[in-house]
Length: 80
Image 1 (tube, one colour):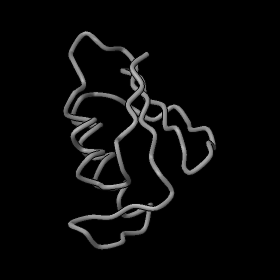
Image 2 (cartoon, helix red, strand yellow; image 1 turned 60 degrees about the vertical axis):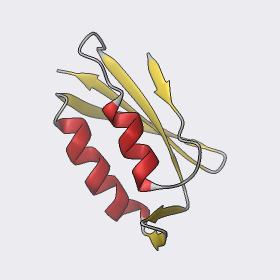
Image 3 (cartoon, rainbow, N blue to C red; image 1 turned 90 degrees about the vertical axis):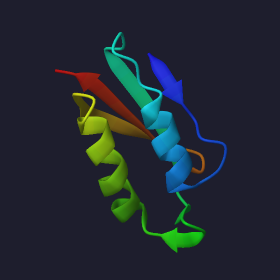
Image 4 (cartoon, rainbow, N blue to C red; image 1 turned 180 degrees about the vertical axis):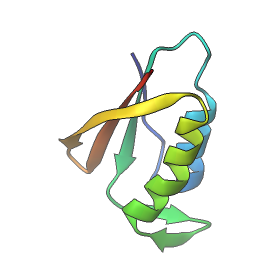
């Protein structure tokens, strides 16, 4: 499984991680920090995940769950 952990809690870095998904992957994991920003401004995690999930779905991955981790959550996705 590919696990991606952004350098900081920005939506921009989460989207860079999603852009790194390859066609050869069948699964994808993404660590999402509890505190996020978008364009330098704080953003609620649920709003940020709506933006990120849209991009992940565009790669034909679907959510399979998440794990609570220190400082955030590890979201898991698989191709259907």
